[in-house]
Image (tube, rainbow over all chains, first blue to last red; front, side, top):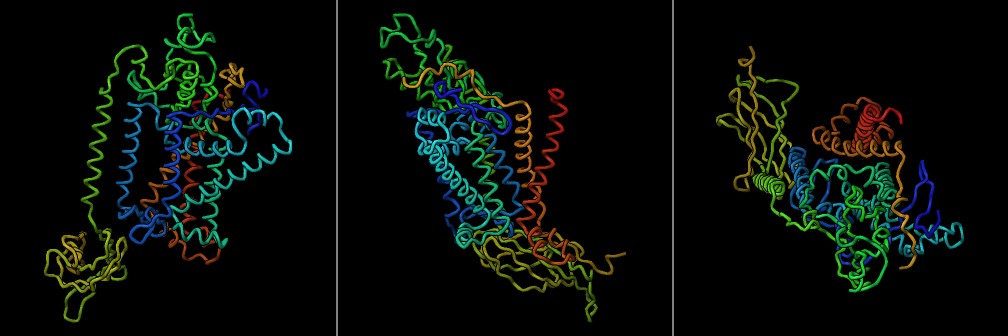
Length: 454
Length: 100
């Protein structure tokens, strides 16, 4: 193995593996991919620092078991929405895959995004592809060690920052940063920063395309969502073959060979190390690096662009592409229905909830005047975005309710001790925000008296 | 073009040996399952219940460490990952090509 075949051997965990040195390309899809990666990374690293209504905009507050998303506070009881959201995300993936193939893989998958970031550092420190390959062929020189060390340092810093940002979604970021600066991180926080950092480092620095090839379930089942009208990165075989060098420009076509000049730049650009000219392969993550690479070559040799391009199988075969087809309509309709339901139920979500906890010590108590009293604790969850003063009542009315009104902050819990006299055996507790219109919650409960126990 | 010839590249694509592939598949699939499982379980179970359940234990720094919220979430996650990995391992063993 030597640098001039474009392959270097390196001993990985168990087996000799050959390293892919993706060639850097430029072009519209590459720029789009960089823009997507940049945007997503900015969101991921930036969101923990954003504040909203006096709290971190997005925070999974595990000790308090609350999930803040901007002005919305979700509780474990609202878990259904999270599941719903995940189902919608999966369906969106199917929908997009049916139309445009694996653009998720190429532009939005965290694996791609962080690999792009780590590759960026690698290029910055070690230079472009030919330099890197020559470089690795002359290992253990002083410069090699220095550059490798610099790269590792930058990688590790980025990985740890990633781990830190991950933990900052669970522990308020500012607090976490202050404690990190004071070297006073808790054991579990340190563990998760390092664990997540290590996972990032391993996945984006070393495993890279192996994750797509061997570990990603989506890569295996996405073909089920493909049909002849799905956009895929394809090599136009009819135009390209027979491939070979030959003359440049317009004369070339007359001379015989197809448009592919067999420069293999598309292969060198591929981050997963495949040859797109062999047709669609499951390793292809549709990043379109080969499209940009080939377009640049076509420009140089004076042939039209698009020898490798996003195209459907029908287009390549010279047939029409059907954009609206049963599969797309079905995914789209289902997705629209789910999204409408999601938004509606979330908007109509009860802004409060109440739990009833009975006094465990005594089922009932007989008062001096002979009346029966039951004691409860009400746990009021204020899911609204502002604080309210809550009043406890029963339905049907008529019972004597002894309870102090309680003020519960937005997204908070209030406990109210309640003593109840002369209530029917089955009734509802109703808690109402006295300072707002139409915000209440109810819970059925029982009133136990000597008569109700045989 | 510069550093050609590279026409041998497609043939030289790296492949992982079957065991490493199986290990990766087991590790990753069980990781995803553990993520979903952790969400489902801890949406229903408040770790505080577990912490309260241990209030008869002598309080110590070690107990406080393991029986913290984050501690229980973490242990829960890794426990689920382990169990899911075990299931995946058995599935791979049963479905696999008999030790090849």
